[in-house]
Image (cartoon, rainbow, N blue to C red; front, side, top):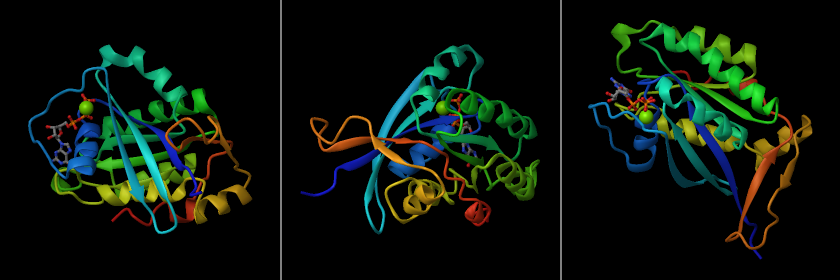
Length: 216
Ligand SMILES: Nc1nc2c(ncn2[C@@H]2O[C@H](COP(=O)(O)OP(=O)(O)OP(=O)(O)O)[C@@H](O)[C@H]2O)c(=O)[nH]1
Ligand SMILES: [Mg+2]
């Protein structure tokens, strides 16, 4: 019997207009819309990623950054083993606020989560207010994965999700992570869920050696 498909609940967080929905849209449909349509509440999308040694399914919760939806978000953070915290490299305030999103995740999940920090909109390099080094430093300090991307240009968006998936337990990276104290438990067992298992992490695999390598 083939191994059940590992699925990871992944929440996208960050201030309004940083490009969370645009990143997901680029990843799912390879599309970009330059008109802003605020996310209302939370959107759900799901996609399988075929890695060299396995397939993982990412269940993506695209949250609304607007203040009026803030009360909805904690329960999605609580339920997710992966968090993608996005800021806009042309807006320093969104980078500073990333600290708040990261601490919301830590408060709910402790170390039982993989967090990726993402600086979006690299196509707007003439308006840059946050350097690559600033992003790398924050990621290193807080034990996060890090990447910069452009949803508009389609730059590094696939890499973002691939890098994330590769860091999750179950593959070669996962073996390494388990050696560092993480473990995998199959919360729902492997039956009755369409051959899928929920993966829980018992410690964050802080893959710091790789953290800065995709910030190009
Ligand atoms: N130039 C540029 N614009 C982008 C990029 N990504 C998103 N945008 C634009 O930024 C605006 C906001 O993008 P969204 O993806 O809706 O932002 P969001 O984070 O989902 O916003 P909320 O749903 O309100 O939380 C839109 O006008 C997008 O077209 C990018 O990589 N480059
Ligand atoms: Mg949105």
